Amino acid sequence: ARTWRGGGKPQVTEHEPLVGLPELVSSWPPGLDGCICNCAFRRPSKPGFPPEWAWIESNLSHFEPSSPISDKLWFTIGIHPHDADNWDDVAERVVRRLGAHPKCVGIGECGIDFFKHDKSEAEKQVRVFRAQAKLAVELGKALVVHARLVTPENEDMCLRVLEEAVPQDHPIHIHCFGDSLEHARQLIERWPRLRIGFTGAITFRDRASKSGGKPSSKAKGKGGVEEKKGEEHCRELVQGLPLERLLIETDGPYMCPEPFRGQTAHPGHVHRVAERIADWHARPLSEVMAATRQSTRVVYGI
Image: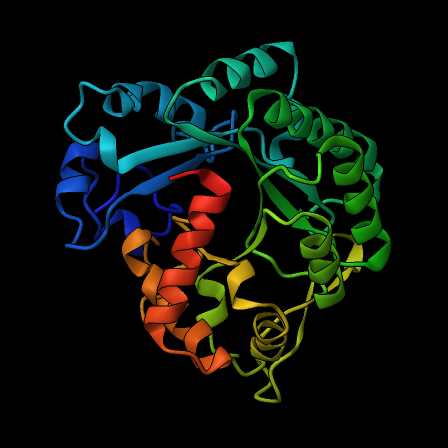
């Protein structure tokens, strides 16, 4: 079931019923104590579907103390780099208003993306990212970062923005990490309350190329830029970072882990991410769950 479009794929829209938020929460299994909803698009996700900002506004009553499901719900609010064109004075007022809500625990996801965008948009993306980073600090909320940087030069650019805008003791969630291990280590060394997030993507098995040859370890983005990807890269990242500095997440409705790839990702799937981390770190699953639960407290205060 879902409360939104779930990525818009036919296998989702035709087979997963659209339900209200209370009904969705009632379907959660025992042990799933809550969910942070990430609302990062002002624009419609696709024609005919409501923007994420409209979704949170229409469901905000469920986050109020009087709601029977409020104790299971939190949210973040911001503008994704894909939607940077929609950052203006009105957007800032909306983020400031919703960011002050007691159930808002973060600003973002916001950041820089040079995989699906080219460097001609750098100035705009950096300006919007910097504005939201400063707002997160002002409001005392975690900063949720979308960074798809691809090159060492772009990693340095992102690092500079963070160093200029975010104090060393501020909580940061680097969401769905896929850049270099060196960059990840620079981040965790600089900010003690920063955590590196991994999604169901780390459970994906490499698929053979269309020609039947060896799977490619790179993906091509805007302008032919190449990004490292695949099992080997994910393993290098997970094994190269301390367990205590990791977060597990969904990136719902996307990145649904194996064996459910292509369906709507939801919080009930995060144990699949934890299982892969446990395997690669050679640690019991219980230790991974405990460490990442503690990291959620460190970053989001819940």
